[in-house]
Image 1 (cartoon, rainbow, N blue to C red):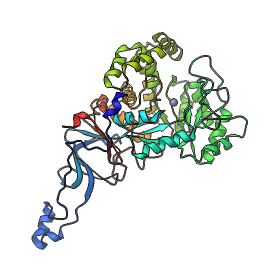
Image 2 (image 1 turned 135 degrees about the vertical axis):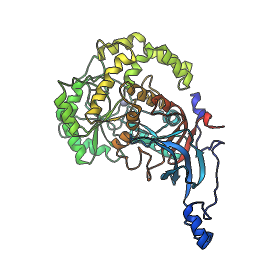
Image 3 (image 1 turned 60 degrees about the horizontal axis):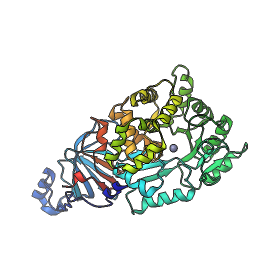
Image 4 (image 1 turned 180 degrees about the horizontal axis):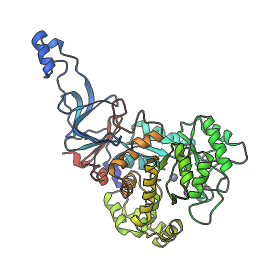
Length: 476
Ligand SMILES: [Zn+2]
């Protein structure tokens, strides 16, 4: 991928100067001037030192409230140490001029399959994604996940934080092992089969030593016919009980209302997709209500449906090439792998009667998500990259743009930041830009609250206060 060359690790663009201001001497405030008058310079209050300042920026902290204009955000030891009025002069080793720009929390893709990570990690980062959740996959062996975690913290390349669930829990002959056959599915390494009643606890025990955020449980009868059997609600309940016993939450994969009913009845904690679901608010009201009581997070993955529309929209393919996420060869390969005709067939099976356009297919999906949001569900941005036509990092921007069919930008941003961090159990550390939290930040050249597409206009990306990417346009 040619775009990888643009990624800079730990490099400071020329315009972002090291500014050493005098410390410990007279500060020019009314108080210190008064003190100087009485005691001389030596009694000025101690001056705080910071590693990094984003000065004079508009701060959008991720909580969904109004932005704070003309503030400076100070970072020390990888964490946000202070947020202050930009007129207050403070000392920082590196000062980035944030005037006219917007600072948002690092984005989180809460449904990502990033392998091979050497290619995807820098792509996430240059699109402002500083954390990802890997919810199992055919190559998600404990070793591969450990390698992804290690590379993520090695400093060798620009990389997001890596969170992951356990390997898939399912049954033999079911989704995804039967529906997506691959030699990579190996029992006890990338998948755990529930074979007989009572064995869920053993499977939970077998995965619990990995640093997982929870158990991945697959409840699906297949994406399209021929369907397989869905795992029965009794087995779901068993997994949930065993997981809860071990202090772990259960992240369920469902892709139909039928699957959702099983998930709800089985007591799962979170949902990893909003795909193939067509909620009938009258018919499903009681079930949705019971689910809501459990306070689940719901990952959107609308990109799965947009990916089906890609072969029907040559102009989208051109945009991919222009943005540098795919070259001409890769686009040809993608086109060969999924024809427009097959796309239409699958869309008709999933969403009978809907027009095969973005609004036609996804308008009703976003309307359902709006309904869930208004009933108090916590929605979380996730993409299901790297399925066909879903690109690491870029697809997070696309996901947010699809959500704009039914949400304000001020509602969408928290879904990709605060809500995601809460689902991952990491809200104490990540998800908003507040004092004490890790300095995972994205500097934008234009206001994302005016138009969510402005999230594409990235100036710089920091993780733990370390600059991982700076756009050409930010370099004078
Ligand atoms: Zn997935």
